Image (cartoon, helix red, strand yellow):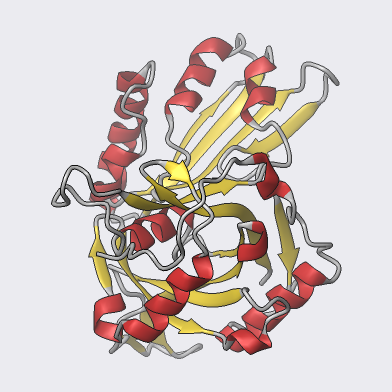
Length: 323
């Protein structure tokens, strides 16, 4: 198994404006002032907790923090014994962790990607559940929020939109009904059409008990071209930040090179790296050490100065941002 890394700029925001509030203060307060019970959250997007953080003295920079944020599975798998008929329920709750390296000096977070664990949207939902941003605050009190901005490598959707020929589209998403309203943008053009396609596919998947659903549209060798404008507007309607969408794979003719290209709109276009190829080790200390060593080694500190493109509002690090 290979570990995939994604890169984001991370900010604590005040009334929607990005600030220089030190994220390490937030993380330290989470681990030292909250208990395991109060760190656990049941949210619309799932059940989460942050349960591990490396001692700061182990990090490459004094402000750096490496934490484990995990999501609990709603539907548990079974444990078995190979080459036997033994299959038993797993007794405990199934915890799917992801490792996050926070580098506050560059407003950066390096995220271990786990498609069934805590991802970027889940991390935002989880952290925001602790911040003073609810409707119960007085009108003159500031609203605090945690925000991630993905680092991009390629144009992604722009290449598909410029194409004059799309060969196939394959959308893979979780069948779980609670995710369906989040798969499509509320204000999207052709919202009804993509919802109809997804809804019909989900109905079949639900009846047969499939947890993951795949919707495929493909051009036959002997038929006319598919309608590119309609297809791209459908793709634009998808909320790629939704945790319910696993992948959106498109094959198309690149208008500039006239060559066939393949892209996953969910992930391609994001700055990424791959480490620990064919390595199944998954302990927190092991992953934390390897992610940090990679980033400061052959990873060449990707995105280290990217945060300078964002204007930041100065705030006092001693201000109480927690609920």
